[in-house]
Amino acid sequence: MKRLLAALMLLALTVSICLIGGAAVSDIQSTAASKLKLCEENIEAENINAAADIASQLREYWRSKRTLLSVFVNHSRYEDTALALEELHSSLISNSEEDALSACRSAYHMLNEIAFEQQLRLDHIL
Amino acid sequence: MLYDKPFYGNNKLGDFMIAVLFRTVILYIFVVIALRLMGKRQIGDMQPGELVITLLISEIAAIPLQDINQPIASGIIAIFMLVIMEILLSFLAMKSFFIRKALSGRSAVVIKNGEIDQNAMRRVRMTVIDLIELLRGQNVFDISTVAYAVLEVNGSLSVLLKGSERAATAADIGAAPQPDGLPLPVISDGKFVDEALQSLQLSRKDIEAILRQAGTAAGEVFMMTVDRFGNKNIIIKRKERTK
Image (cartoon, rainbow over all chains, first blue to last red; front, side, top):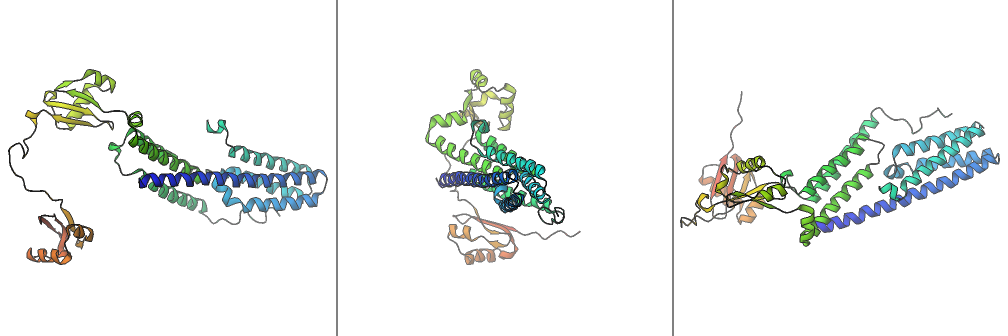
């Protein structure tokens, strides 16, 4: 009976970790995606300084979430996104709009990949 | 500017390998906890489901160990879910005969009154050679001496010999054997085992008195066992051999 209780408690803990982790990753992903969208809009409106500020904030935000994301997201996926954000920032500093837009889309694509992997879908279960 | 400082700060040489070390230690701890939750059983005593779960745990634990990009939590959660499922299913099996039968199968009587039940052998897909090997493992060399042989769910064979083949027991010969008491180790490698003393309701002084009578002391004893009837066995420490 003691073992059964331990198993039930562990089940509750495991399910909670999965749900809380999933929600946290989803929250981080959507925050990063909205900042990225804002950055892209600023680049298209040729507000490079504003875009660079947003890119810098986004880069720091992504770095600050490293530990949490490493628990729930494939590490290489995190690193690839971090590199794309770094590239975005450096492109904006060097006033290379084309490269910045490309980096922006690349980072956005990676963020979407993370969101897709987190989704509870039948094809993920199968 | 981009190249002024490393992306994630300066990494000392070997950080990656130390991370692998930590991952191994963490996974080891969680695997031990998982196996302890499953309970103590030797591989030979495991039900088919338990054996599969144990093998799966080792496989799953290996994935985050080999691939450092894989979050360690994915392995730990999978391991714990397997153990949780195993515990819940064994609890249900305890409560329901149907579930128990579905999960573990049933034992099969393969020999009845010295005769092999060929239908049962076909059902359990066992050859006569396998049966004879298992019988030999039980020190049975002649099938005709077997009253019943049961192939258990875990693959072991339980054998009941015919009455005429069984060794006579004390009850058979009408003898009154001495009552048995479980011998408990009260001294192990020169040190008192207080738990054993408590269950035997003895004190260290009682044991020391016994040892004095035997002409020795606790520090010189390798092992001493005592049962509840006072039967004792003392093994003295041997001095290390010098070359």
